[in-house]
Image (cartoon, rainbow, N blue to C red; front, side, top):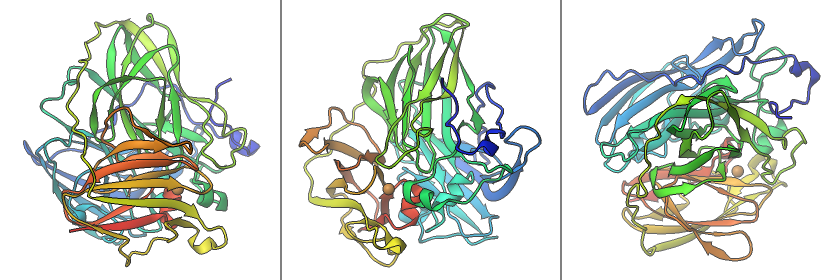
Amino acid sequence: AMGAPADPSPVLKRLRLPSGRPLATVPRLVNRGGAGRFVGTLSAAPVTLNLAEGGVKTTAWAYNGQLPGPAIVAREGDSVEIVFTNRLNQPTTIHWHGMPVPADQDGNPHDPVKPGESRTYRFTLPKGSAGSYWYHPHPHGHTAEQVFRGLAGVFVVEADDDPLRHLAEDWLVLSDLRLDERGAIPANTAADWHDGREGQFLLVNGALRPVIALGQGERRRWRVWNATSARILKLALPGLEWQQVGSDGGLLGAPRALDTLMLAPGERAELVVSGSLPAGKSVALQSLPYTRGRAMTPEQTAAFTVATVKFGPPVAGAAVPAQLRQIPALGEPQVRRTLTFSENMADPASMFRINGQTFDMNRIDFTGRVGDIEEWDIVSEAHMDHPFHLHGTQFQVVARNDGSGWVAEPFLAWRDVINVPLREAVRIRFRQDLPGMRMYHCHILEHEDQGMMGQHRVS
Ligand code: C2O
Ligand code: CU
């Protein structure tokens, strides 16, 4: 039977979240700018919400009081100005995950906004940057907590020449929620700090198991965000045809048939879902078991329903072009490096490491040059999968090695997160077009907070 991820405590079983409501549209942040200029206001603050049934109140931390935060929708070429105020009782930042923003606007741990203070983030969205991004806090040591308490929102950059703009869209922002028996969001346990936190509830746009409408014969574009701290998602939609048409940094060169969709924390995908069933039928969007290399309880390895797709009356299916865009391959690298994720169990204070070192804000791990092509081999040596993320640019995966040798990646895609399975390696290439200090880290946010992060200074 498919249920929510089971929860080990009988007390918690009494805590219920409403489910089965129509998929909520993610509210948009109001643009006070106008054409070519996005100007918006965000604040991070505690908010009390009725998430669970029976009058139970939950205090979350949210952008503009909303779970997930308001969606920012802008266009290639737009200038963006976000006036941000921190109403939390701890420092925070806004990091524009995956976006090619100047280093001093990136919201990395070097630029915390103190409680009660404001700052304005300013950047311009370059041509070719259309894609599905997100924004979340990034203060050193508190990123995981701020995200699992609710601070995350999506940022969609649109293009004038989008070959799929004729398709209707559904956005699925997936986040993890854990509640204690009083309905509060509890702090991390020691196991969470090691393994990465997963909750009892996987929410879609802030709600449990919503119903997504699809017309018989209709084709819709889904954008899916994995905004959890640590859950690696293996999604399936049995009985329906779905194709992947985009990755973190926008459209693929061509649609790809999809069986299951793996989505690491921080990663996004664009899909085209085709409604092949008659009105009244429904199918489950499922989360399948995936053992990310660490001990998991039987409950954690059970499949569950993320959402239900319900069929309505026929809608004429729009065509999906065979070619979506040209993705030029990044050429031969000027620089090659190897980065190894490891854990030093003997030193609990600095257990999570890259190349044997824990994060030090005052240490530059690598220096590089603007415009150079870098090739990095990223290896996961200890205890579980570690999803790799790089700031400031998008990369291409060129090969993978599952332990039996390097295999070339069969297609080109722009990405900013790639899962590195335990005892495997991934080879990426990228170019930084803007100077400055760029972070790279594991996107299991507990690992990032505990030092599985480094700095690449590009000049
Ligand atoms: Cu999504 Cu450095 O983060
Ligand atoms: Cu990790």
